[in-house]
Image 1 (cartoon, rainbow, N blue to C red):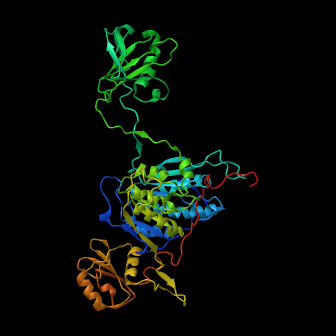
Image 2: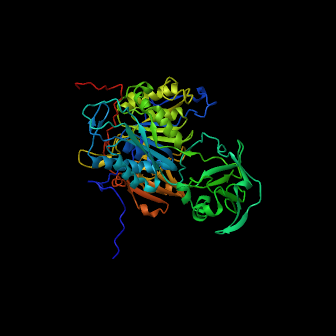
Length: 571
């Protein structure tokens, strides 16, 4: 009997215990929403044009992500998150310590939602340190797929010679940033070459005499030239690039190096030092010459031969070079404490670092999301770079840090961070949202009922979100409150309906379909082929968990800056 193939996975206590968060609606707090009128904003002369349709959300980030799922699935180009490092230390803004299994469960729920929000060509950066990095890597392999792992960036965040704590066993100076893609539609970033692509083509070969022999060597017609029958000339405008045949070049299938290794190296004594081989028919796809020059070493003590590659037949745009995965941002991290005009020294990321990450995978106008917004750095950087953004923060510093910081960015009063580097002026705006309370509450008799915090419009929106409809009330047709397709609609009312009401609705709906959610119905609801009737709240009681204030991962990484702590002998 064949055993069932098991996938490689990380296990932990409670892994199979899943949560089912309520898809809350978002309530705009108009007094906290902020924008500079577009007519006052200079939209010309810069690629980083101000963005206006941004969202700053206060509340539990798992509930907030669930609230975004209906309208933003597949729309976010880039996610950056800086989740709790789970170091076990308590600090001013966060309690950064949770049992590993709880941390993994809470992170897993969030990562799965974040993956759904990503566009097919989108990517996610997750910054972490040694405490949970290995576990997070395996967890992300499960959530995103190991084949969608791009790389890990290692960033130096702390001076190795500035000891902050006497009792530490090792000085941790590096943090990790995992990069995953949503799918293979993602294009890996490349950096520009700093050297002219033709700079290495400095050789010309001039044939001055006839070949001393012609042979067919392993399927190729080859002309053999002695050193006195050719000249190799160095020139600034040469046509050939020279490669020494050694190392990994030899293993490249079908290459001139492999051909030399298998067929010409052994002919060194027979053909002599410096023998030049013109291999007819090799290398035609690249330089279009129709041949490849290969040469034996010219000195007796040399082991390896050479081949010459001609310039590409057509001038093609360079794909660029791969990015390295290590960066030294220690000074930026240590000076980030007061960026944005607010003090948040325990975990603030420097704007320059976030700018670097966003520049790798986004363009102006793309949507960026940070569900652990902290002091607002990601949103501030995205605004200055002309990206649209969604920021979620559960703590009170959504009010004390994020809100004032982003207002300063929009007003042009924030002159720190990357402002000068990107030539940020001012403009744009955002809307501030709070999570609505739970739709279903338990009354004093133990019955689950609709919360009195919901007015009819809020109820209609909530029902759309919970039942998978897009909330979009028609200004004329009262029963078109939301839709799931072109001819499929939903209508929610707290009234008790009679058959006469459905008669009228059925006639107006016509060839479409309508889901009616009401408190009660008297009559035969099955008599209408284009209408379905469900009673509320019974229709939604089993859809999700109700009454949860949140799924708190109310923790955060903490990185003391060199300015904050100094080593003292008696500490």
